[in-house]
Image (cartoon, rainbow, N blue to C red):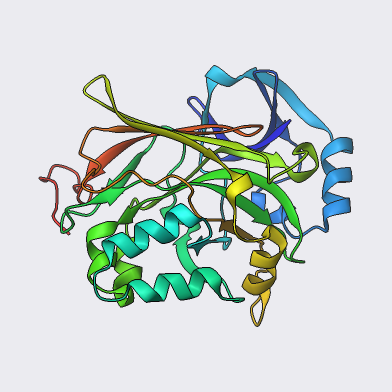
Length: 296
């Protein structure tokens, strides 16, 4: 069973439902995912197991949307895997020691990634900045955290990043990480109680270009340098998330320099026990209706 946010073909309203065995059923009386994240974990589990569901629809008849809404924010973790630390050191000529220090520090690197309305869903285009030369996807396990700081589910995050901009200066991190099209989530949320061991999940990344594989790699969450509850604990310090929060946990797969995403590429991220998130790539800002593509 997975929790989905979706639209039925031909209908304008957004619905919340459950996906199982290729079918989607609407959750009656649930208007948003944010409502679910206001519940303690035990109540959420009871709610999903006992609530009335609508008629089942084949998955092919619905359009899956990014599994985040309302005022739920997306945050991300940095330098949580050794490969990420090495990649950051490689790209940063002037401040390589910053990444070594944060990798070994008690306090993790956490940063705001996206508001819900900016997040791209399954099948939608992610973006790379027009003022950057080297841009990469970062496949990550993402945690769904309720308002009480409990991990209630898991999804896939593509934390798209400009290596060019971050490499120039660590203070440029917001510009390298937070822009239109820089975050994708999906395809759904797998409840936490259905994932036996979040530290034993395979992660695969495949990038196709003109019908051929441009880059691919595989790793796993067993290499994670941080504990998930520790990341959540620091995120909740001194802050509130009344509609819950999505916390991406860092990447263990980084295409080597000088590889960069190009307009028209397809990025496919698969995490065991969760699913596959697929997005196309677009360079620059989307054009207003009838206009030419805009440059950032």
